[in-house]
Length: 237
Image 1 (cartoon, helix red, strand yellow):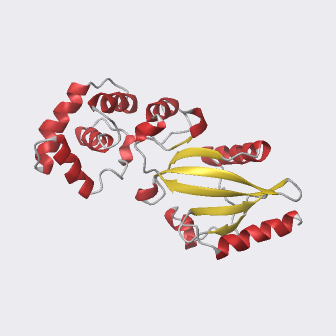
Image 2 (cartoon, one colour; image 1 turned 90 degrees about the vertical axis):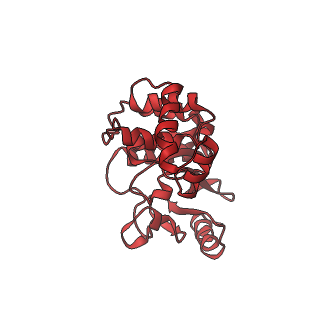
Image 3 (tube, one colour; image 1 turned 60 degrees about the vertical axis):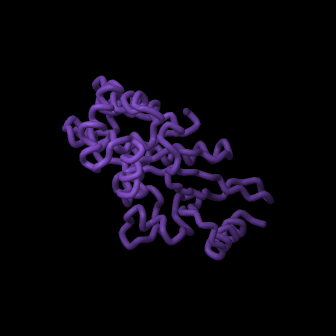
C-alpha cells in the first residue's frame, strides 16, 4: 500500500467510524484532511470547519510550538502529549490535553500524517503538577496577555476554583502564590473561604460549599484572570 493510499484509508475510517473523540487528521503539509463534528466548533473556527485549511493559522508563539512538536513527533515516531490553556476556545474547553500522534504506513514504514486529539481536563490540576506548569510560564515574554488578578474578587474566584483541584488549603495557597506573585498562606485562604465564600453560598462548611459551587459549574470553569495562555509538554512533569 502506498503512502497516499494509506492516508486515504485513514481518512475513510475516520469519516466512517465514530470513536467519540474530538480531533483532526492532517497531512505532512499540515493541511486538515479530516475532522470530527466538534473540534472546529469548540475552537471557534470561522465556518466551524478546519477542512482544507492549514492547521496552524498565523505566526505566533503557539504555532511555533505546534510546528516544532510535529517535527518531534515525526522524528521520534512517538505520541506527544501537551497541556494547553487557550481562551479563544469555548469556556468548557479552555484547558485541555492535546495528543499529537504520528500516522505510520506499516508497508513503507513512513510517517504519512498526524492525528491530533483534544481531551477535556477532567483530572484535578494537582495530578499534572500544576505548580510546575505555572512556574514555567511566569515571566515568559511569549505570554504577554497576562491578567491583573490582584482584586479581591479575582482572588476569591481563583480560590473557589482551586479548592476543587487541591487536596488542602496549603496546596491552594502554594498555587495562588505562584499565580499572583506574592505570598499566600493556608490561613489567608481559610479566611477567604469562611468569611466570603461561605456567606456567598449560604453554607457553613467546606463540603457544603463545594457541593453548592459544583452545581453552578465552578469546578469546571477556569477563571479568565487566573493565568496567561500556555502550552506545556506533559513529559516534563
